[in-house]
Length: 346
Ligand code: AMP
Ligand code: TRP
Image (cartoon, rainbow, N blue to C red; front, side, top):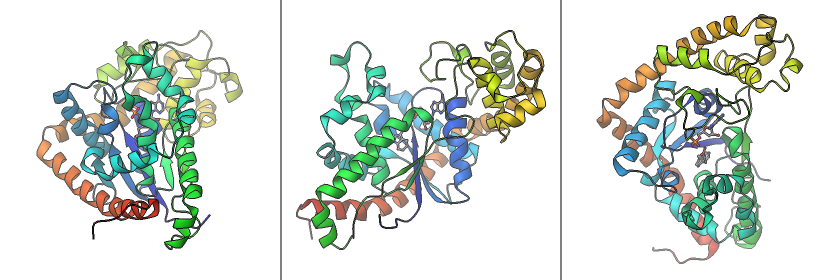
């Protein structure tokens, strides 16, 4: 495999409230990666419309996710912050990848099955094709690293399969046109840390999600201190005190989840948390978790509110990011068209 320039890409959908799972599994890690890599962070509005979105609400949510990126510490001067629909190369590459990806591969995607539910005949074609667009997002930039939560693992495997098949199918042209062995990198998923899968506060076996009907199941980035405190105090637990070793968290999904959340918020491991709170009752631990969550999330929520009050500023950030993103993607897609054998406008 030839060396590709290290580049980070990730995306978040502008649908529903951003919650603690999005923050700890994704956005907080996006912020940290800026120190080490060149990064692109995308508000994936084309993905959002794979299920029905009210237009005015979609507009609001695109700005709100952008505000969350900035409030959490993504620096738009350093990283490229933009929304997908402003950069036409995503949709363009997705079409070419539609002709590379196989029906059999997409038929295995578990997220489509979950999202389409029982009424699969009535799901949009876009929902089925969602993972192909995701591969195009990443590979339009030839990104090498993608930080995401665990629920995206299968989609990233598909991205790798598409890159591999494109590199193989077009190996001759890729070589001939001076790109060496491979045009696309085989992207590394970066999934991990204590909060790769944050669970619902009401049920430790279910993922914390934007679509859970109970708002008590999640902490939203826009919740105020009282809201955070109430939700943590009401969070489901079992009757035992906390164990002093992580082995003691097995088969205790709610305890495991709260310890994982504490660890991720405080940048320590589950082991570190249990060293301090092993033997503690949940009432005491929850008190400490409320203080920690309010201290870490409160300022982000406040900054988000301040930013969304100035949509002109957010739109300027997105426009600047889109121009910088397109400057990277456009030559890549032009090269893809040559590799495929299309005739270019000259
Ligand atoms: P989405 O809101 O579906 O666009 O997700 C945005 C990012 O948040 C993706 O990287 C997801 O993997 C991540 N994510 C969503 N829910 C959770 C969760 N419950 N725990 C950890 N990461 C999550
Ligand atoms: N599918 C991702 C999610 O729902 C969002 C996404 C779209 C994404 N394109 C991406 C994530 C590219 C990483 C890279 O969470």
